[in-house]
Image (cartoon, rainbow, N blue to C red; front, top):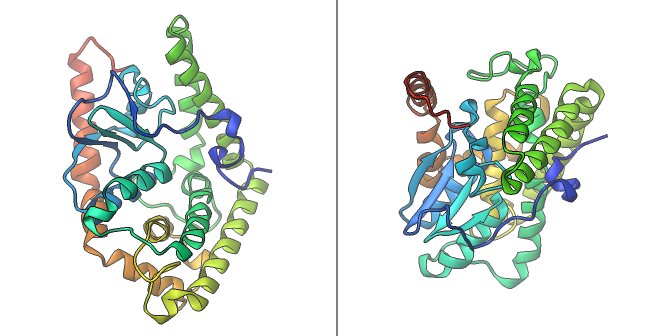
Length: 316
């Protein structure tokens, strides 16, 4: 039974993350983020960038249009996921890895994400706990009594979201069978999606994922009552840390999915903690402003479809 995402358990299915690796396919100058407005992991990295306070260039990858599978993007990030960070032509992938890289590179100069040595173990512990939650299953799984928000609609009930990706990747593997780089990337990604799809469409597995998430949030509630937060600090340290970036975005996503009544009590410390993270300017700039669906998702999708109608060159 799968209770955590594939990348957290089946390391053989995913390539190791990249850290500051030069790429001939990436922009050569400046700080660039490949992301999608509503992507959970993109939200985490955007808040981290805003918290640090550095300028960056946006490259939106339209996940509904499957642009993460385009050859041009797969050559930059073979995992075919967002976000991807590029600094002066050097690529870093994986959300935790990206945030750690940003903190290491800019934290001291920007007086941000600098933590005491005795706090690091607890911070890393809570980062790992947040990163290992199976949010994708909670997002696309059909959970009884939970009405998913727009634009998810009834995707989970149709059960087509991941199946469509599997079929597309099968076609891409055939199309690029003589390109070992792309073929490898697409085969790995198909295996990841197949494993994820099975967990999401199997009621017993999805129910177990919900219960596992409840247990993790119970641990979070206890930590908030016993740790630094209870005396004016944050989750695992006196100052805001990467653990807070991870958990704040996760809690915001669970609220958006309508899962708060199912997973934790409204009068809990979790609610107060989430409100405090969400109130930060970095959260407003990195998440809320990018969450305007009409401007940041629907309009770009319409533009993409119009372009596709008049272009012979398909992105895939």
